Length: 256
Image: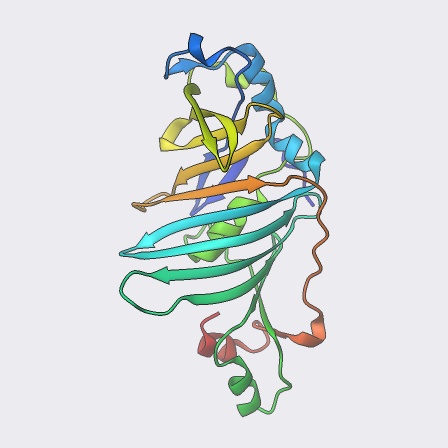
């Protein structure tokens, strides 16, 4: 896995800077909009590295991308090996049934399970049945990535093999916004550039939540992490997977 020395998230061709912190000052002595302190800058600099050191986490990621449509990924991520798995559920307010897929992902590839019509499409071509369709991760630089690709890449980029320079966080662009509870955990909330926010545990200084808009979109993605620790995720075996690059007609037919 390539080293990530800066907390950068490549989304739809733009670099989103991921920064977060945890206050060591009393919240009563702060005003929303105050710049981060030197102690907070030290936390900012190690935040993504701390995720890597802790090994992994559970996550819930939500994206209300359309009129009454919300895509939610619920799963776990191995930050050390850059492997994730999730159940992706799209819910609709117009009465349509939920659309559910099983996902596995790495920085290079995505596996889709529970794909409607896959067995029939394979049988029609005389191919053995498979539980998953594997395809390369869509590149974002050309603006071709689907929302699923963008969401899993956001999660994969929430770690770094090394910390950053704390001085980079003392330029006044990153501000304290107060404290709030997220899933029973007290967090310090910080506003970042471009409408992004982060929430960091006040007790163990781990990243609890990251919220970001996407370029040229009118919705925000929210990622909530919990239960940090080692994870072991096994990718689908080759014998239960159909390669979308080798079977592009099948991939197009089932919408992968």
